Image (cartoon, rainbow, N blue to C red):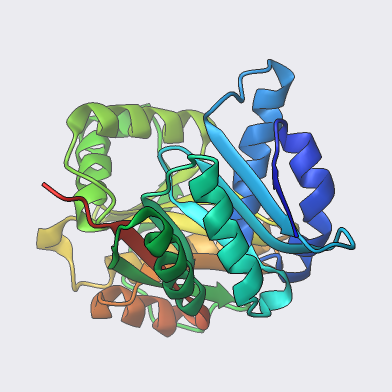
Length: 290
């Protein structure tokens, strides 16, 4: 087997896109990372920020594809979702031998368990399940009786509250601590790129959803947030349903999103709209010794 660490995103894309595109929606995170890498290729700023790896067999066929854009999780895909413990062990040993330290992993739920067990033995560390995620895909918005309100794109006038929502989204979704500076930056960025959408009830903003990464025929939704005191009133359902329909109207064939398996409310919202589960992922983090 051959372990390859790539110096440019173009080289990595040339070797892996054919494999990844066979399961395009599942591998949506790869495409976003590759897009970031190709931008960095232009000014030679890739350096250590993106880790791009493959394991190939002796015939040059890609068995495992892996990528990480720091500080986001390490993501792995076994070609055609065929389990290959020999290749996974080779990847794990190669990471340890090359001093490539992995502390957070996100991929299909059985694959992440196998990788963390193998890699953990090489570095004498153990991992724990930080979060279980379900990947949903929508082909058509259900005919729903939605709460009355106005759906619109976020704008500069929303800056009096939107940074607080963006900051609170991080701890609410187990993505990090509450950080208002980060919330301000995130709100400004999403307003500038036109990706954030607001649902208003009685002219008051009550829910947020954002358009995020994409594949060739699927647009993804993220940043679904309703303030705690406003939950349970149908605002998230209306916001996500209307953004989903907008994406279909814009020409996308599918809509996709991730949900925390342990959040029954959000799962009910997405299923009510018509989203169907296609894959379960796990996020595993290393147990650091104090």
